[in-house]
Image (cartoon, rainbow, N blue to C red; front, side, top):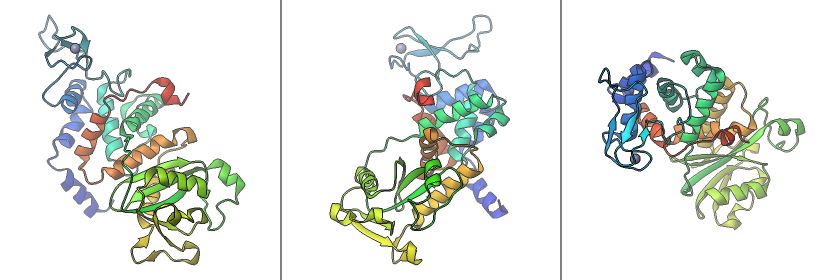
Length: 323
Ligand SMILES: [Zn+2]
């Protein structure tokens, strides 16, 4: 990183209360619990079971201090609870200070964060680190169903194995096709990205995915892959650049933004993630999608948003391992 870049980053995070508090919260369990409580409930803690606001912190009878298991009691339903209840970290035994660290890294590192890094920094096992990361990715998985519109760039990328893509040979290399997963990227120019795992790059599959994600009447921009032919007859405006003829930009017609996103995704996956299985690829996509779509937020805002999204998103073990 060059000095100018570092300077800019420091300035954009300067004075951000979340970024200021996080290092301490990642090192001290009590501060971590208070940090999570603050993000989740702001100044109005409530019972996650019945929603009652008449709750109080349980104190140690000898010391009068807050209990070391950080429990609360609800006067409504008489149940005890902690800030973990109803979140992606509810049934985890990992300390919350490590959860703070995982949220921090996943929400802010441009190229993504690996389980190996979490393992090294926290001392937790690699398996636990990977588990935690998958849960944070699950929290980041936005269920945004509003169709993309305006100018929408569409392109495909092949993830996994050795990257190879030659024009006109998308179907030819059988071995490659087998080891790779195809991702369709749909990107609203200056707006949202939506990466989707798709089965193949046939016209039928591509059009079905576009129909599911792009509002009719939008201007769709692609390269000249034959699978995109016929979009005009299905209710979209379609323009393409002829990559096969070395044409990359024509007026405002190009696919540079989606290619830029794929560049970030591939660098992240190649450089940091040692192996991304097909089964888990959608989780990594959710992480990259989250950071891209929240790019105008500060680091602190992005972290808080992810923590808030962790509520009501419990993930069972079976769901997580894809059983
Ligand atoms: Zn209650």
